[in-house]
Image (cartoon, rainbow, N blue to C red; front, side, top):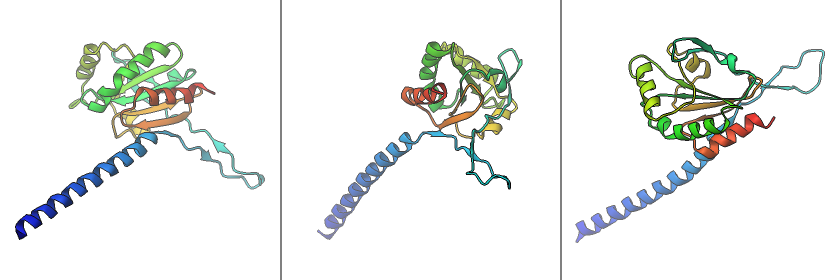
Length: 198
């Protein structure tokens, strides 16, 4: 009888633990999802000695970098300034990257004349190669521009250690917002709105 009570108590505790974990997951999951798209904090200029005015906020310039197109030509991010830019870091082996690609492609087909979509592949040469990335793009019939970060200069410039990571850059070349992790179509549209409503 004592063993049955102990077993029943353990089962009850386990059920309560699972229920609490599920509740925490839902609450924390909503919080993370809502905050997934974050704006870039404005830098504050130090006031000079002659000016007692309030500190003025400065926009943050998007760091330039060099990557390569499919033909091996050098490409700079700054080549695309003049139009808003959606800059996405991805890899073909990355499940979350794969899940967001259809939304990026759909937006590219809708807005590609007005916005640059730059899909920067994290090409390390072993886990991800130009060939494996190109095969993934071809198999899925994606037509947006794919660039290859074979020297990791873009990833280092943007501290893009987690995939996928997306940056939203305005036409003047200022980083406005970023998202880490896979984003859905609504979040992608919110980011696009932030760089087109200026």
